Image (cartoon, rainbow, N blue to C red; front, side, top):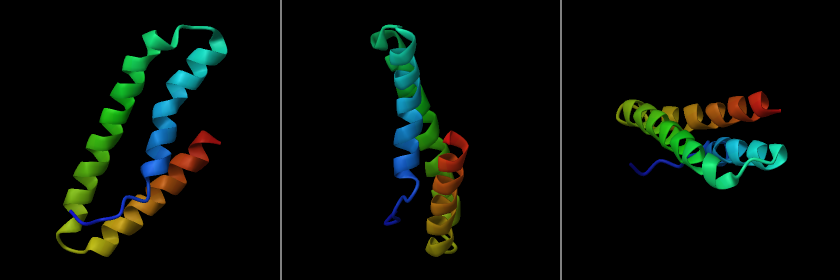
Length: 78
């Protein structure tokens, strides 16, 4: 699609959240690993659909949407 994904770091952080919370609570990380994969798949699907919808008319809109999404996810995680 030739579009830079500015929300990629926020998605990686979302994928890491289940593993981090499992490690803090003493749960086996291997039991939480499928949840992390599912979180990554959902984020990728939502972002891919969003980028495809915005990429055809104006690629700059998709870049700005990714950037804004990364900011929103970062603020929500704080």
